[in-house]
Length: 253
Image (cartoon, rainbow, N blue to C red):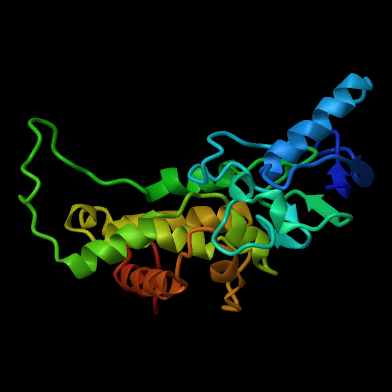
């Protein structure tokens, strides 16, 4: 396969960026998208040019690092697939492929296709934890949890914090990510101790980071590689309003 690439190149957050054209000849359909970029970078290095910076880690679709906007879609054209699991057979010989970083105020560009997504980490640190007693390991069935609740909590827990929901949203909202993390713990008995403060603190941190508001277009769910449901956003809203109704920090008069 011979491809034409249009890649966003940007030295750092303070330097204006631009799209740069590259040829990608001799690409195997069996390569992953990141392997294709590796081949392109090898060619650039041999010519003495600066390679394209992009983020990756496990390359197994479970870490969320490979955050690229491909032909106008987060993670590319396939549903339920991260960039590292996207193979070049999803494209045709002669295609032009446009590659950009996540576009969001809260995700400033570090270099080229790499963005700073630590805002999501700070939201998680604000309340995404549980208080448990130390000591011996409890029996697995010490706290009975129904299968229905366990399945809902597990579905929310599959979020890999990649930020595709933010990139897909016209408002750059992080509501799907935050709601998944809140739902995961709010559904379980172990998460009840911090239930109220968790949602207050995580929503407050989300707002502080500069993410936009949710307008319920559903683009986040459609582009999420793990299929996180927007029903979690409704649950988060219920958790939030319930917590704020009894909050000591809000005057509801």
